[in-house]
Length: 276
Length: 319
Image (tube, rainbow over all chains, first blue to last red; front, side, top):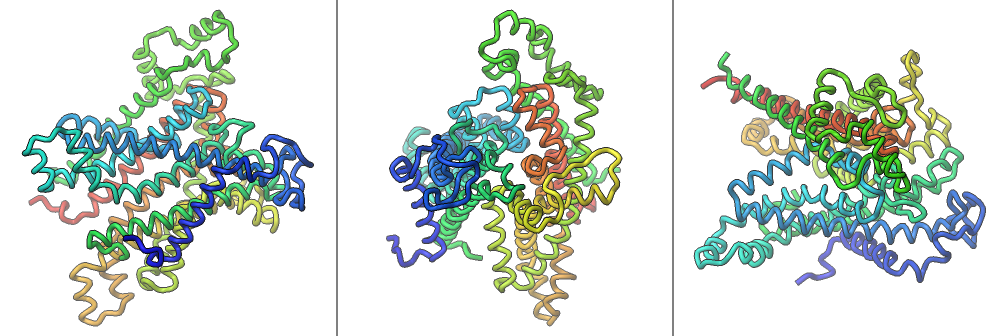
């Protein structure tokens, strides 16, 4: 069983910080000192006792905006990751199990989508779709599912030829049984590490889109949007835009630390040289 | 010429051309057939049906989709990129100018990052698991976790604003003296370099380490060559192919990174052009820019594969 003392300190730090972010995102309305839309001070006021981190480009409390930003950013990124995993893994497993022309067709189509850089493709699609959070989640999830597809297909192809799967096929189990009862449990550990990486990618991707003005629409703001709102202050020496960017970075580093550890752990379990 | 090499390269080029056509179709479908009428979204939800119908007519939206696709593709192949919706001007000259600016920026970022990352990667292998190696893996973690705009704004905040070196806005224009132009792109080129450097370094390190585990390197070690000799004469020549592959893939990554960096530094390149016109819902510009970005990306990936084929000595001699 997992012993907390055996977790390396870097991974433990990652877990604690990630958990803190999630708690903040859940309990934002109770811990935020102000309303996220209320103008409570001067524009870009420096930090003070009333406003610990100062105010933003419209005079809203920056700490409050950051807390609400955590909520929006994590919420959208989590939904997009969930979508990309459900879609990518189910298609990937199905392609591996069914094989034949279905696998070929799907794989080539995924290759085609992946031959366009994700950000460019998202920009192209968002230029005609309405600016809406649901659409944003769909676009992010679908585009990112291509990567999950490749990984889960690769993993499933390996598992599909193992003896216990052959046995299941011979005793006449259906494709759904093979996918959910034979392949999924055995593909879980590499996919969990990938989950962390995809989540980080979703956060960075969402931030980039919002920074470019095509993600979350004002007055609500995720961290990328906050950077966009406050970026003009930087040339006057107002570091307000750096704070949400730093918030993203700290979260991304933490999740990466955890994902690295899981990755090493699963390769260690398999007898591989995970730390080499 | 019955060289298998030539055949492989030709196959790879052919594949890329097919891929590019498929991508153009995908971009076209993505912008034309998705729910949401282009004319409606340009005019907004409050537009009268007559206005929408007029705009549809003038955009040629009443023609069947395959005709519009062929028209667009034909125009692209003959160098006519169409007119922008937002100002009615031809897209070609503007796009060409912006593409030149983007390539200029990307070229200098590559000129710094490629040699630097190769040398640092070699050093990391030389001191494997030592202090420098640890530093390199720590910076890798940092740069894959930092959003591109954080790196950009940190540079602006500390270098341009606090130290007062260089300007935060990278204006370039036609006929600008070379040195002045170089001065303008120092910060964006640095930011781009930082974005790709760690990743390139890490992959270079992995490529050389992979070679270092082979039998002939062990032989070299056993006959008492110095670590440097082994890396320089035995490991490096054999890892050139994977390293070139890494470099090409990262240059492809640079093409995407350039979009955000250009917006940060208000650099008049193609990324900024694309983003501006996505916000204006100017579909013809978005299609053209999207396809050119995809073409550069596919082209670099193709070059990576071709270099890999060319540098594989086993393929050089017909059996």
